Image (tube, rainbow, N blue to C red; front, top):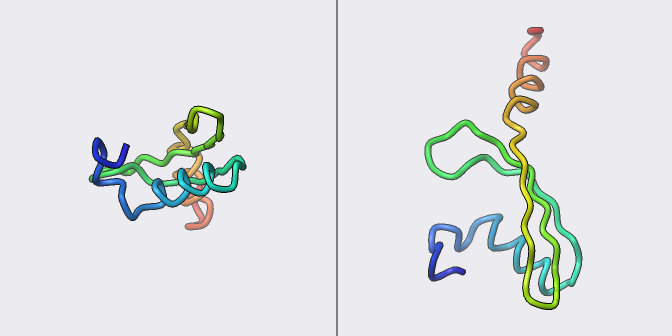
Length: 74
């Protein structure tokens, strides 16, 4: 995987994916999209006998709403 996606080496993606496999435990994290984007994603990483399964969902609207609330907007 790291040869195919070298830009992920040293990021929260690599750290969390490896931790899921090493600890054989589900891992969850949020991350801003890669590159120049304002998108946010919620990741769930599930270990299995054959590696890991990764599920994600777009939480951009939630993040924008929270930011607006903290800034005093509606």
